[in-house]
Image (tube, rainbow, N blue to C red):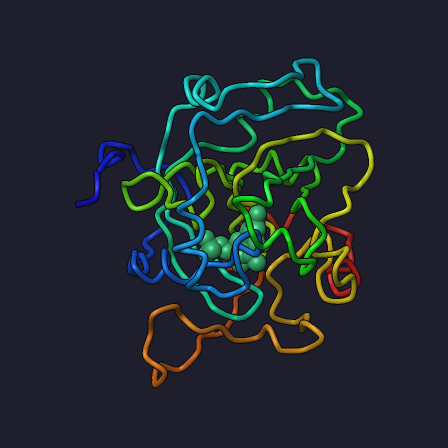
Length: 270
Ligand code: MTE
């Protein structure tokens, strides 16, 4: 039986009238290369990860740096639910009711300095448990990043749970990023370090394939991945007879985020 730990959490803004994908589909088809490149094996393998106690190192261009217990961070950040459309670069899409708190609210608590132009996030490195880290499919540890104004956008979210429950390990427990207008690979799991930087962080996917995975990674139907189109998407769990739907620019969140990219050529800065 599953514990409805978060059932009382209020639904926050931007949640729209989206119908959530089945929990089982979201929890059993995951990308978590630290465990496996197989989307089903990560469900089993990630059970070995110890998610409590958990601490997060805050480094770089901020006044309040140091190592913080996740429990203390949670005390300062009231939980809410955000029902977001989520889309992976491999062309599947889903709607997930995430439980967590806005990223920007938390980042401000560390008082970033005026030199903080980017935020870099790092996943745990522990190859004894994260056995996929014994392979070199990606450069470990997994690193992702956002420009500071992207990170402060009220849509950017940190999740500790989903569907009224604690986040399953395979979905990124105990703390994962959710950036709904960007491809799923931006949404880094099991975060252990947050670093404010003046220069653009080198991210794991762009190191692996710079022509395939850019820093911005905004959902953009007009920019094809070199090996496949991004113009349509498959709803996770839908039957193979269900036609794919058209991918929306910024995953449908253009009203909230398009202004962040004014003047940029998004075909070049993909
Ligand atoms: N975070 C870590 N640490 N390792 C990963 O392999 N995969 C990314 C992202 N976060 C990944 C990660 C990719 S490619 C996607 S599409 C999403 O997680 C998938 O999130 P989900 O498995 O919860 O659907």
